[in-house]
Image 1: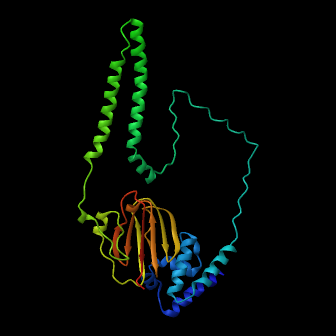
Image 2 (image 1 turned 30 degrees about the horizontal axis):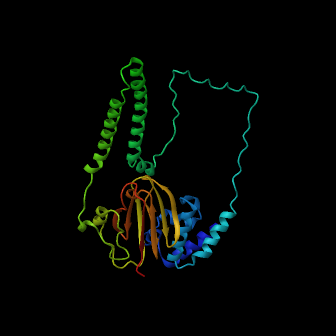
Image 3 (image 1 turned 135 degrees about the vertical axis):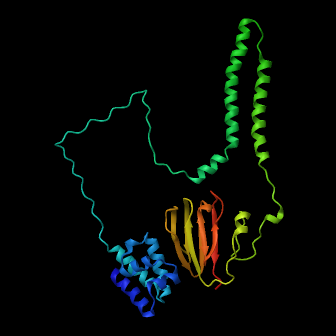
Amino acid sequence: MIDELGHILREARETKGFTLREVQDKTRINSRFLEALEMGDFDRLPTPTHVRGFLRNYARFLGLDPEPLLERYELGQSQRPKRRQQAVIIDTSKPVAPPLEAPPDNHPFFDPVNMEVDTAYQRNATSGGGESILRIVIIIALIGLLYLAGQRFLPLILGQGDGTAEFTEAINGAVQSVLNRETATPEATVTTESPSSVLLPTGRNDIPLGDPTIAATRPPLPATMETIDLEIIILERTWMEVTIDGNVLFTGIARPTDPPYEWTANEEVRINTGNAIGVSVTINNVPLGPLGGRGENKEEVWTTTN
């Protein structure tokens, strides 16, 4: 069934007189993926979602109904044999190694963990100023209680008064100093923007409000777009979801080591990302650059003018 599907695609292309390179230039689908579709070697494509998306766009380009071809693909996938797991045989004739002894108390022990830093954690870390003030106040209060216990009861024992007034004045001065230092920092970083720096949307494909600097540097898109040729280059690690003509063709973590992502839409392109600066977009050979700032959640939509 899979070989028959590839034969249908190859025969339709040869009938129209197109080479794989010409189809790549018109559909923005890499020629090696087109060849894999025609050979029925779907394992060469990144994911089954890519297979469905490329198969649908390729069929439409060749003038074929994509639904029967998609049904043939799904049927062929369901008939593929599943891999059998090999049973693990344990040789009981050999002695079992003794368990490792725990390291001594004075020996440092490190537990290495493969950790990926999430951009949401970074945003939370930069917005924890209020929590830091609270922690400082709590620490000062605890130290004050210990100091009060010593200053109040020790003079009573020695007959020199309770020392409450001096202690209260010292605590109030320390707390006020901390509060003044924490509240003075944001005032030094406040900036104002003139109303002229704010960009207002003027049409369906205008840039959404968010980052005026990025919006001002984007070149305009063509006034007429019968199709949308999309190219995405990943600059930083980010979560991304790409929807082409209502079909989700990619969702997950994208990395700078990934090859450029290319799709062609006849109606609509929708991109969601959790780190807008990591997604650089080109629409119909017009480079728009990153979608936004670092750690910014961003959704953008482009539609054709059909």
